[in-house]
Image (cartoon, rainbow, N blue to C red; front, top):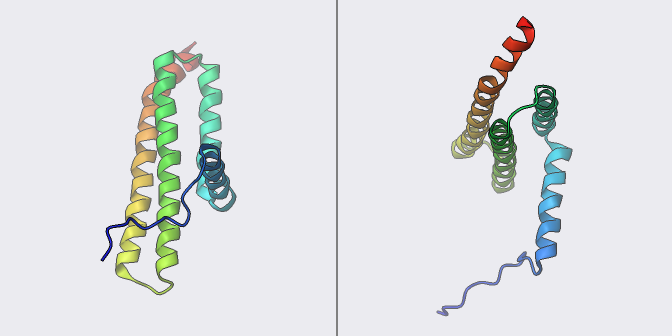
Amino acid sequence: MTNQKPVLKFKNKTFRRSFRLAFNGIKLVFKYEKNMKVHCLASVLIVIFGLFFSLKQTEWLFLVIAITSVIFAEMVNTACERIVDLCTSEYNELAKQAKDIAAGAVLIATIGAVITGSVIFIPYLIEWLTN
């Protein structure tokens, strides 16, 4: 038995290549995942509302964290789904649970983002509607 570590077949050789592969992953999730397009459309609308209401710096910070959390969760969910699909094409209860748990993470991130957006925007909307 040897104590050598296995060489990873897909190991990134350069920093530049790592970024290229990461951006490719982002492009893939936008290309194949409808939910990612929905999240990004919602994000663009939120940014437009933020510009309209001239949000404070800390409000922008919370929105950026909320938006990136949802996009991050969606990407991890997509990766989990692909890995599960790669492992089995037949129904498997554990595979279903893995997919459901990953989808649940997206739901939690989305609920958090909606709450964050509501806390930030509702006072602005009330003021705008009453003036």
